[in-house]
Length: 354
Image (cartoon, rainbow, N blue to C red; front, side, top):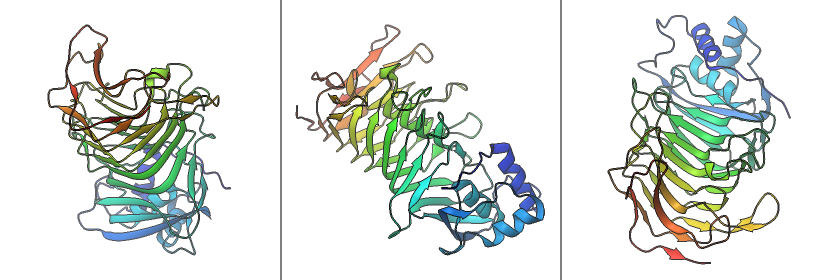
């Protein structure tokens, strides 16, 4: 298994400048681009240690067929940037990858990037143990529209799987799709030093679709209640609005030590429907369910002492006991500030199965 060194975001921007010197602003998306398919294999070629003409030649030829894959998602990003890509499909060949902290900068593609498993090549796993902490993937408002299409597994990342963060300048992250992925063994119960925030962590994100995923064994030993399957919040550093009008549908949550779906910071209009919350075994082999306070909760923190005004709803779900094997609430609005909110409500039929 090949390991590829991390490339920080500024380094990626520099690579784009080298690859497309005729473009006045390489970080800006090209006005017209091509649609590209890039193949990635764990034994593929790497451009991480190349620069200048060598980087340009490699990016111009590698990854464009199943017979000549590149070795990591970062290598795929270099290929896309070099080809002035509009829309892209990244095909993941079966294998284990160690990508961590992958950031989607502007200039990689101007349209939508779909990341999917290559059929018939075996299971795909992203394993974060080499990174020890952090997230698998980071998305911003100037990133391409990211469409993550499983099946593949994202496991053993200390902080979380996908973190999407909007900004005051560029607005919320839009168009994010996360479908059919297994987020597994995330948090400091599994990765020493991890903070264990969420499988999908949305900070100022609107109209994302989080569907048909499995969130299993997202657990903290320290700060058990701090880790979630899906977390709907704001950009805390910039005090943006919360995450609004997102859909969490058809997912399975199994052994999440914090509330499996949590909203905060004014997040509104989020729909959590037709999901299953069930029991399983924790990091010590004990049978547990999900959550500290409820399956879908809204929480008020001193950092943003505000309620969600647009009706977060919970409907058509099936749920079991909480993480401590007691019957928990389906929904709950709580506070660390004394504020009383009714920012999440159960609608339709939700079924409790102990």
